[in-house]
Length: 78
Image (cartoon, rainbow, N blue to C red; front, side):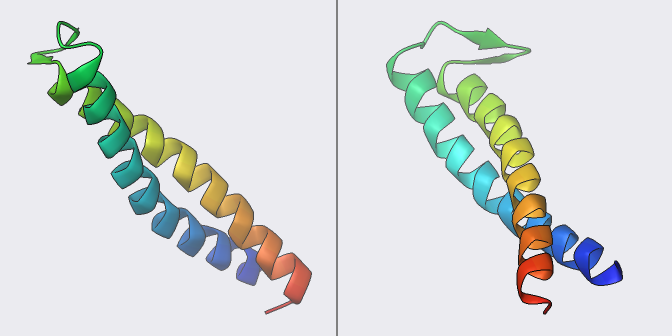
C-alpha cells in the first residue's frame, strides 16, 4: 500500500514537470500563432496561451503520472 502511494507520488511529480513543459510549449505556439488577441488575466497572446497550457499540461501530466506509478507498483511489485 505504501509503495503504491510512493510510486504514484513520484510519478505524479515527474510527469507534472514534463506535462507543464509540453503544455507551455504548445500553449505559446497556439497562442502566438493562432490567437494573438486572446487575453487571460493581464497576459495576451502567447503569454496567455503559455500559462493556460502550463496549468492544463501539469494537471493532466500529474494525473497520468500517478496512474502510471500505481500501475507499475501493482504489476511488477517493485
